[in-house]
Amino acid sequence: MECPKCQGEMQEHTLSTLSGGVTVDRCVDCRGIWFDIGEAELLKDKWMSDYIDDGDPEVGREHNKIRDVNCPRCGKQMEALNDPVQTHIQYEACAEHGMYFDAGEFTDFKYETLMDIFRDFVFAIRKQ
Image 1 (spheres, one colour):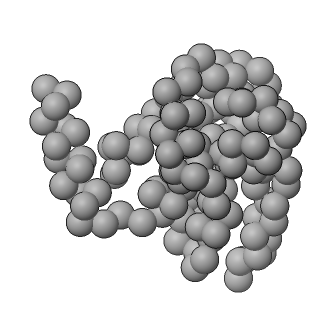
Image 2: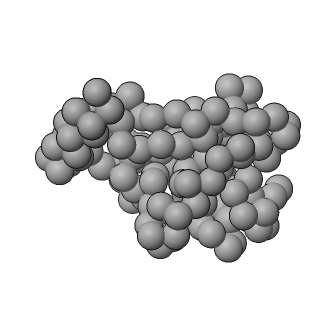
């Protein structure tokens, strides 16, 4: 599979959980992560699952500016979405196949902190 952001090679990585293994695809270049439908939500609550997100968040922020991103499974343009709980997190999703997080985004998605609540409050005010 090819990375939807930088066209690098995506390699499969399996994370073991008590309910079984979950295989995600991570780009060898930009370290973005592809999750098939339901995988990100499943891994969000799993201990140590954020170790898969070992990319540089600065690189992730730069790649987050890339628009017109196509699904690596079907080739259709993905939709840019904001997480409903942490609205500052924006990821790309294909309704049929899954979602893509830039480097650092899954770790942010996994951990909601007091700073995130404050950041989202400021983000909401600026959007008005």
